[in-house]
Amino acid sequence: MIVAKRKPFKEIKESVSGANKILILGCGTCVAVCLAGGEKEVAILASQLRMALQLENQNVHIDELTIERQCDREFIEQINTSVNVDDYDLILSTACAAGVQLLSDVFDHKVVVPGLNTTFIGVAEGPGVWTERCRACSDCVLADTGGICPVTICAKGLLNGPCGGARNGKCEVDPEKDCAWVLIYNRLEKLGRLDKMKKIHAPKRYSVQEHPATIIHEAYKHRYTV
Amino acid sequence: MVDYEPRVVAMLCNYCAYSAADLAGVGRLQYPPNVRVVFYLCTGKVEIVHILKAFEAGADAVFVGG
Image 1: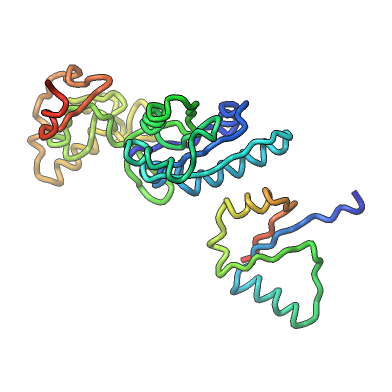
Image 2: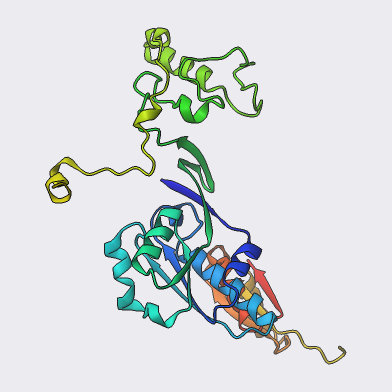
């Protein structure tokens, strides 16, 4: 999932300054799971903002709403069944940056500002802990690396590791972090697939990384191509 | 400041702090009226936003007893 964290309160407060009526819009998917921008976090942020603005004698009205997903037009378009977006001067979105941008597209006459910093694609390690696992490189090598991504976990992103800097299973760039290629070796050994270590990977195919990327499902191509 | 009476919201757990307050009541012990008790089945259910809402509503302090 997408993992994000809330922006510093001071930055959020500055970004909403001047608005008299604000809608804080949460997202109920990834950022709710990583405790950054779901319904609860929206309530906390709204409460903090109300108090901070009241202390400065600013009469700002703040409403809260959380929708299932902000990265999907169908869900965004339903916002108007709950609130009238035109009533607000500004929408403070606590979705990931993808959600913020789609919200800006759908309500392109409204100021939309982000409440979060979108950080990575990762997994939940335990309560309150998430780690990055994927760099969305568009050319997955996990089949050869025992299900451990060297592009993400290796500080150097090496496809043919380990480098000479691994010490006691740790990385020379950050001794607190595991060496990805030691993890890969141990996993492949456990799987009886150490022969995979001998495979020489060609340089990374950066050409497959299209930015900004678009994917059209095969079954839908007829809709979007002439 | 002498007349300052802070408004305190007390979030109390059914099984300990609330029971204690109840028992104090049975014993005819008084507590100041500026303490407002909110009953919780368990204070593990206290959310950050509950505390923020109390402050937003004008509380000067929040006491969580559990």
